[in-house]
Length: 124
Image (cartoon, rainbow, N blue to C red):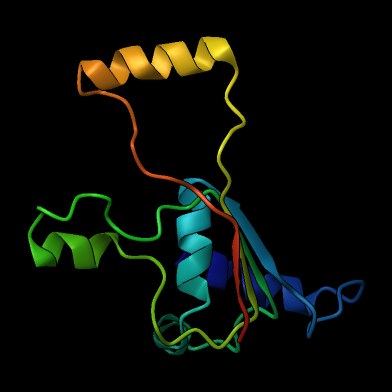
């Protein structure tokens, strides 16, 4: 994984505290950041890992429960073996009337998102 590959050069820089390097990711980068918090992924990379992980708007699990289990496993980015302190930021908008009308219209056509979002924190 690219994030782990960046650790070596960062740790070699004299102006960087090698024991305090974290990773932050947004969207697809947030999904990758979550994987770096996994003990299994860290061990497979063969490096000590990051000190902390911040993940902003990741896809944590497949939103489609009707997909095959193998597909859901590939799309899961938050594993049960997290040891790294991890902050996950996911929030829902405060809808305006205009947004609410658009969402209601899309929902009536079957195309609006229905999942609720929330902020959570997982500490290792």
